Image (cartoon, rainbow, N blue to C red; front, side):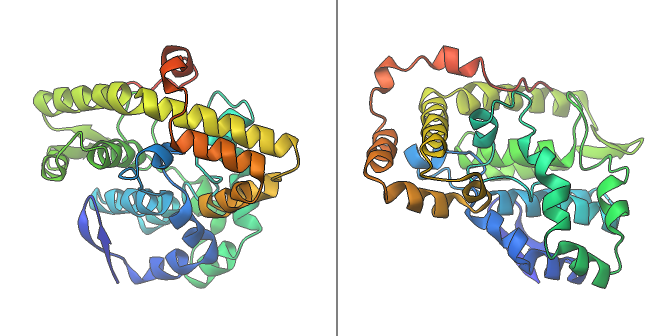
Length: 278
């Protein structure tokens, strides 16, 4: 199977991963936007958790990760709610870890354990193994951090795709962890990661969209317009529910129109962002 990725181009998908990608649980991620509500105010920023997850798997494989780690990479974000990290704002999770709390329950209640078993994988080994290529604490590199940084930058037109791909050639695995080959590569990535923080995560329009949609979701939950379970569907489904209520439809359209953006305190909103430093 060949997957055409907007960042890496043609990615060969190993046969053992195909049933996982085809599962209902994984396919849901195709309608969960990586940037939360950003797509509502910038249609070009439309990449999804599906794309990111395949990208992370690709990087783990590129750097020589085991089949188990490739599976873990593919499924690492499978428990994200609709609008990704907006659930953290709705439920007051400053560490942006709400999806992690849901992770194993969602896995075990899904079709994935049966699929993994048929493919010869042990669920405990996949999800509790030592996966140093997939995840590392800040400030270290890992496949997850690399993919979201490069993907967000490219989708926001802050970085040419060719430059991102060239940078990957300046990385290698050192003591089980992805590392820079040269000081210049490290400086390049630090500069781009700083740009990501300043011009993407802290862009006023994007902060506005995420702040306002989080407040709208919280209101809709309080009013019983949506339920917690609805957040475990996808963006398209939740937006459909919001569009069916006159009040939430108006508020949603206000977000799309950037209503009152001039009075929005983006500096205050940025204080709630998780600190990301390389």
